[in-house]
Length: 276
Image (cartoon, rainbow, N blue to C red; front, side, top):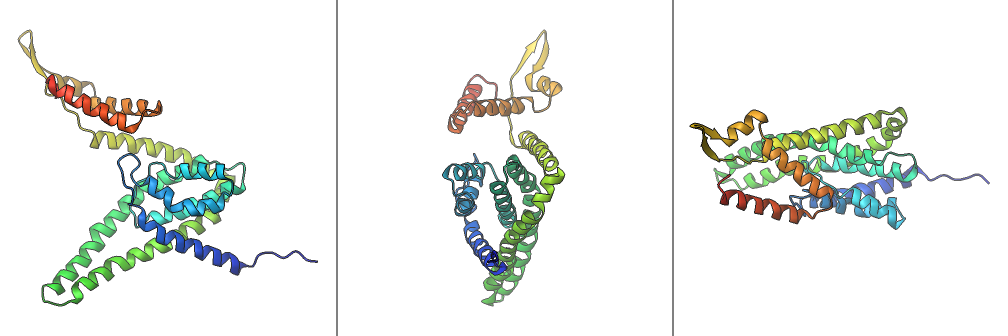
């Protein structure tokens, strides 16, 4: 008796079911948006049923769910590509004991920044403006096709990118991830992604965290401006110290809510004594 192998049709049918499930669930990417993990919780929820099929063992499933519920933030139109790639890597991890699990989040971190820039620029800076311009031109003339065309022009490319992005990401991963692991390329990508992630944290700390002191006094007849002294030492020194302090607290398993309360208390105390 010859051994029978699964037909490609069955595999294709399963893949199409996976792509449809991913497409419909990814619309909830902003469903639990928060300032702790941004889109991370929704990302894990979207992949949950697919991860459960990949990992029948409850312990490994929970590990995968936690791994895919970490901080994540990118353009929601291009996110399905990363989701498809993630699923492909999770399947590789489930079938290989020597797979580098850290590379899964490494790839996510490496892609979410560039994808956010490209996706926001195209869908919000180009496509939405074009669709709005056409719709306003027709609507101002009393043409009811104005809002209809807006929905079609804006949403049709979005839906196509969302669906086929997941397809391409999944198939790209299944084709190249194994080879990238064997050649060592995936390890290099993981290292580069970690470096890029740290650079992004540093850039966000410098641009988004604001803390300027207004404390001034006179010493030996000369004005003493604390902020000028701090800027000469290191521009953005206090925001840097605040970020590092929060990072240290979070590493010690301090609740993010407690960290926020500490920052609020620090702000009130600093304002009360005239530092800010």
